[in-house]
Image 1 (cartoon, rainbow, N blue to C red):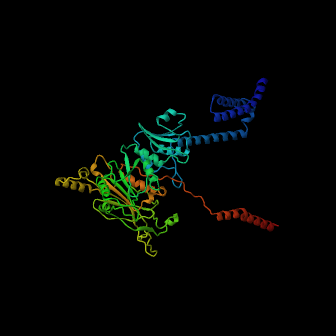
Image 2: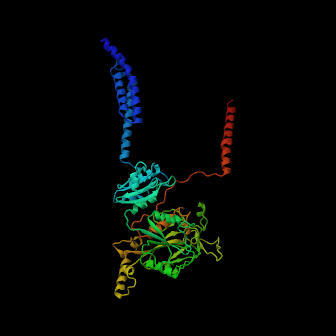
Image 3: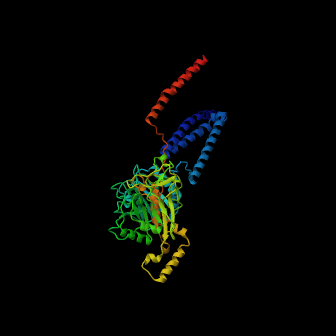
Length: 553
């Protein structure tokens, strides 16, 4: 009996080594992983603690009966309960994830167009990023895409660890991004430290996966239009953006090509300074007559000889320029000759702009008159405090500061008109019966003009094809340097997308930017703030302390 009591007397000393072994096992398991050694240390330590506190005389008679042991046990149970609740909440959060974007510009939220495109993916689609390092910003964007649709997945691939897969995608440098849908593979962009994954580019590539027809945009040349090849300031940024949207951009010289090519999805006339030949105007007119789409951006003080083309649409170009006398533009550094537009028409081109801002330096009014069968919508409107003033032959603005405002003015219009199948296939037909049939078909199409406004170029119903025209009284708003400012680029890209008559074409998506809220101070303000913080404020504190000391004496 005495031997048993002596044996139990020394069992209490096993508790401390057990605690040390258990602690070492926990630390090793969390740091190096739960290999057999950390598990053995943890189990051995717990076993020694149980023996030392449960079977020793000290444990039975003193440890378990102490008030501190009871309080510690309650605290341990409470901690375990809190950990269990946190684990359950974590599990539910991972299983049923939901996010709330509280940033001002919703910079962590996909645009509605992106969510719609991803949700409509009919086949499993995978994005592969061949980059040895994963950028958190790119991964977060791809996670947002994955949450928007069940058929979207992504994978980061290290091209050095998996050279065979990189070679199958013809990867030539790190940072290349591809989209894969079945046997269809398309490059997206090449990532750099300063150029991260673009939502607009990726969404447009995903939207193109379901379309087989290629889109081609022709820019007219030969009339001193803005260049698209980057040789001088012009439409290089606009042409590059069109390429990202799946357009093939080509120049078009109508003096050497008698007709507009058959593969033209849209023809763009960007700021001509000289007149078109009559034969060139006829070629553009014939292109519209067969259901083509034309975008005219005509600067003030130019006469491109396109009146005969615009008259049947009820469009006339005013020779004056629009001045914004409200002072709104001056708040953002714009003069009165660059009207700030926040009023947009209800049209697919501008429907999602809301009260966003675009500006048009030296813009002319675009007047429209009602013409049968032509649906016209003013998409860009100046504010009510604007007025139009003429420019003299010497280039001086004739400006009367006391004149009352006469706005708003239309700065851009979108027009469409249906074309009949017979006029598209056989324009030379002159049979009375065929003409009457054509007229009856035209009357039938006039029954639903709203469908013509938003109509698609359906292959199943070629009779519903329509000609489309966009006229804007300024071209410089989309030139290099101004293209990325405010909504200027969106006006151009959305116009071309609508003119391209692609079914459910994804319009442009503005890249979300963090609002710059830094305080910018002049040198004098910085000096004044430094003197106040380093001299005046401490001096005031010393004076108050001295006064308080004198008062307490």
